[in-house]
Length: 352
Image (cartoon, rainbow, N blue to C red; front, side):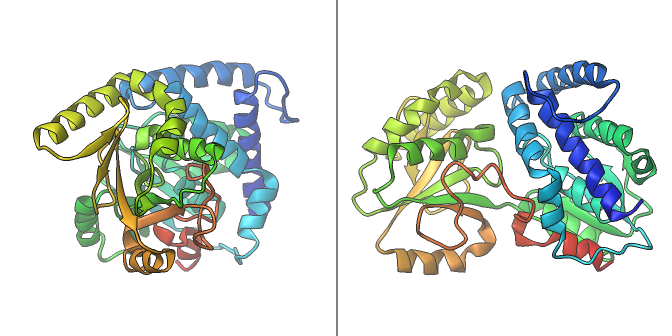
């Protein structure tokens, strides 16, 4: 199977996702058992939600929509055009996947397979259904992938390199355990937003999707705001009100009630709108339902501070602050070349 076949197979998977999510218009994908797969996928999504209440059907389908757009034929070709991919000796890549978001390991799944390697994946118990189903559809579209994909719950053995994603604590374990193998070990990172006070209502509403998407549990979820001195939060809270339905999710509400009680009992000053909490804090990683904020004097000084803490930052959401910034509302929709922790996964795989 050559690169063109692999790209085409993933593009067809993208078409399947588009058709699955669409209520009317369909692509030209020809899949004889599409209706059966659609019914099965709906059941998988409902089961995933029952097993992990953070994985609401709405958020699962948000992830599916993002990937359906990302793995279009042209996008895949443009992404890989900068690499020379000639893989005559496929390696087995062990991938330890996180489970904080639906399909959070899909980019590693894609990168390993599209570069011609074999995948040995250890799924998180929080997200163990969605990716195996997409792998099933992929092998239906391109049967030659069947021998290249293995999911296991056992101890990982017989692999050539490893990609592992976890917390800062688990990263230390991974670094020790896999020290004799080529590896990518990912740690905690967070997204942050830089506000000027000149944002439009629409921009701030879009920022709300960066904050509340996936309940703020992703590394690209905005957990920290930098605002000018004497910033007036009225416009911000007015925009956030359009996301008030988040409090109807019982696990999110429990976190909100708990964090609010802790802060009030500890006499921490907070800003609160009955479904989210703003707390002035220099840390980047905030609890669920809480967004930290910090004041800044000047954009130039802030850039210097953020540069010194770049290893803690996944992305910056802003408008006119930095050349690498993400537009408001786009943090949860990374491009194929937006590599986690800034480490080029494809380049790593091609050097093996």
